Amino acid sequence: MEEYDSTQVTLNKLQVHVKDMQKWQINEDFAKQVENSKALPALYRHALNELENKIDIIRTEWQVRDGFSPIEHVKCRIKEPKSIVQKMQRKGYELNLDNMEQHIHDIAGMRIVCAFVKDIYRLVDHLCAREDIRVLEIKDYIAHPKPNGYQSLHLIVAIPLVLLDGTRWVKAEMQLRTLAMDFWASMEHILYYKFDKQLPSHVAEELKEAARAADELDQKMLRLRREILELSEGSGG
Ligand code: GTP
Ligand code: MG
Image (cartoon, rainbow, N blue to C red; front, side, top):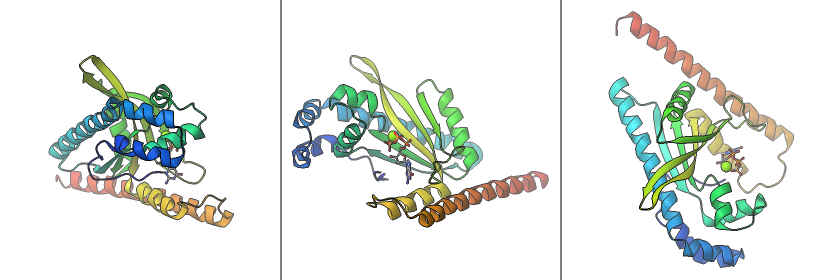
C-alpha cells in the first residue's frame, strides 16, 4: 500500500526513479523502456491534474450552491516505478509498457475524503453522468466491506487528454471515503505496515470491530445531519 501525498503530485517521479531501478534488481529492459518513453509519466501526471481540476470545480460549485462542500480533502499520488514493477510481477504480467498501460490501473491515484457516506454516492452519480470522465469500474467496499473491515468506494476512470495526435484516454484510480473510513484505513496501514504474517485472530477481530465502530459513527453523523436539516427547515432557516 502506498502513501498518498497531499502536496502537488511530484513531477517526473517516474523518470527520476528509473535510474534506481537497476539497484532493485528488476528487469533492466523494462526500466529502459520506461526511461525511453518520456511521454508516458507525463501523461499520467497530466491526467491527474485534469481530474484534480474537475474535482476542484465540483467543490467550488457545491460551496457556492450549498454554502459548504461535502469534499473534505483530496490527495493525489503517482505510483512509484518500483511499486508498478512489483505489482506487475505479483500479478504475473510480463514487464512491458503495453501490459503496464493495460493492466495497472492505479498509476495515477486520487483519494477523495468526504464528510458523509451519502455525499460519496452523490459524487459517484455525478462522475458517472459526465462525458469527460469514463467510469470503467466501480468497487463498492462501502456496501460490501473487505473481510478485514476495509471500507471505501473505488473507481477506475479514464480521463481524456487532447494531444497533438488526437485524444487519449488515460486511466486513474479514485478512492472515495468518509473521514471515519479514512481514519480506519490510515490506522490499519500504520499498524499493519511491514507486518507480513497472519494477524492473530483476536487482533484481526478487534480491527474489524474498529471498522464497524467507524461505520456506526458515519451512520450516526448522517442521522444527526438529517435531524438538524429538518430542524432548520422547520424553523424556516
Ligand atoms: P491492489 O493490487 O492492491 O491494487 O488490489 P486491487 O487492484 O484488487 O484493488 P483494490 O481496489 O482492492 O485496492 C486498491 C487500493 O485500495 C490499495 O492499493 C489501497 O490503497 C486500498 N486498500 C485496499 N484494501 C485495503 C485495506 O485492506 N486496507 C487499507 N488500509 N487500504 C486498502
Ligand atoms: Mg488497484
